[in-house]
Length: 132
Image (cartoon, rainbow, N blue to C red; front, side):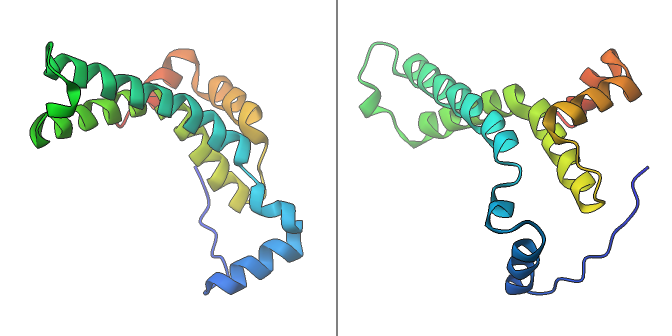
């Protein structure tokens, strides 16, 4: 489905030099919109789930009195909320990264539309949540 591409970069500096030569300084911001589309709602769900879980464990007490186990479980619940919410966006972002290595990058919306067209609406849900 995807071809393997060998990148001739072997150090961090060779990658930095290659990005600057190919795209200029703005090349370092490629994919920023996809990352923001994933991170901003993701942290909303993370902290919402975390605080909801802490409130549940506190059950009338102060949340500051919670021990390490309830905090650990609250963090796990918050992380689960984050990934359930953002996993589809992350899958499209990962495809963009793979396609950009082949020089076939079409952006977030273009990649998402291609996934829907080639794999169907129901297959998209299955694909996007396949690793959960």
